[in-house]
Image 1: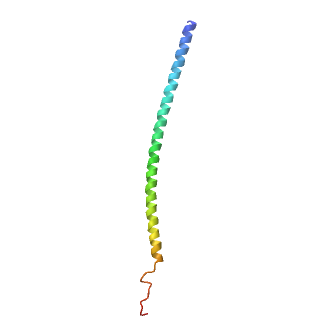
Image 2: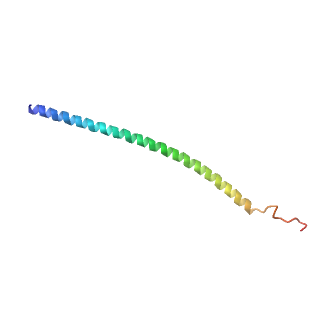
Image 3: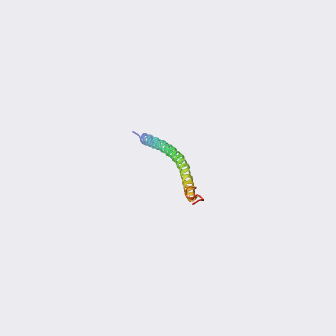
Length: 84
């Protein structure tokens, strides 16, 4: 075996190692992209839910304000008839 054969084998070995590293990095990137897409979908669903919850809260607050203002107004039941 000559020195050139050893160098070529070393270069081929390094190339194979680099190709394996590249493949590993590509697989990792693919997993990260998948995870990022899932997190994005969860975030969108949470934003929609927060919007619905805010709308419901606004309705509840409106109902409470109407109830509180109705309690403050005198009703006819509280008034005595004029002949008393």
